[in-house]
Amino acid sequence: MKGDFVVNITLADINNDVQTGQLKPIYFVQGQDQYLLDLVRQQFLQVIQPEDRALNFAQFDLTETPLGVAIDDAKSVPFFGDRRVVMIDKPYFLTGERNKSNIEHHTQDLVDYIQQPEPQTVLVIFAPYEKLDNRKKLTKLVKERASYLSFVNMNEKDINNFMTEKLKSAGYQISRDAQQTLMRLTNSSLTQMMTELDKLMLYTVTTKKIETADVNALVSHTLTENIFDLIDCLLKGRLTQAVNLYHELLLNGEEPLRLHGALIGQFRLLLQVKTSDKSGKGTASSLKVHPYRVKLARQIVRQFNYVRLARAYLGLVNMEEQLKSTSRDPELLFELFVLKYKHEMVK
Image (cartoon, rainbow, N blue to C red):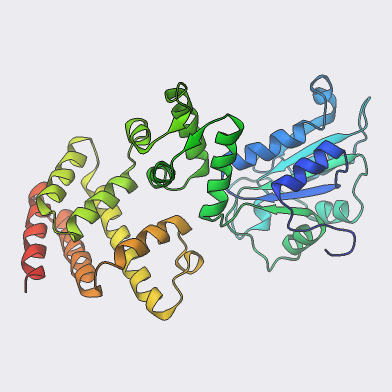
């Protein structure tokens, strides 16, 4: 709490505000997950009756519209109603980003409005960014004076709660292994998980119970997931299986350099986690990756020593140099890499 202003609210708080009509003048929502952003939008849309939205609801994209236009609209009193809802999207001036458009924003307009908001307007500011520039006075002011909801750095428990709540409300169940598999296949993207859940619920409508086999049958494997399987085969010595999977990915249209870049990136993460865990600093924020990716990486690095991981990484870096500097067949280069890696592991 700071004065009369609420900070760090939850989605449940917004729902309660909407249901009770005890709405705050300004809400600030930060996060990149589209599912959650849409969920918040739908909550605030309930404030205005459908037949009144043409008059008492407006939304502005600040990459296309000057901030002053949105603020002027927020200052307007409702037409034939008690409330007006104004949504502002993409306030990039709260970040360190620069927008390429020629639109000029007078941010003092927002400062003045925050100091004296229109009492019958609910202003909702959506910042679809992972990071804000907290050195800026305006950013600090918005976060302090608005009711602030952040979806940044959601952990596995948060994501599981959303999944469980959706299934519970529809009368469905999901096994723990199926839940973990779904998180892995969607790379813990809540938006993608919710989309896949809709398909899984339709697929299991007779039993209303989702098992691992159902997830594997319906959810497509992403490149990230295929890379995870490939590295698992490689490190555990299932080299023939690793080669076959590499061939299969190329046959399915993956570009060799893109595939190779993903492989090197994943091994780099494994080495970072292995090193940082020793120093006690292996957090997702310090590594700047999704917490679930760090969790999976930790599960892998516990099984292998640093030398084994480093040799694979250096071998792949050497292979990348050959891919970029020669016209040799990528599949042949990968097979040679695997043979060399196998030889080094038996030394």
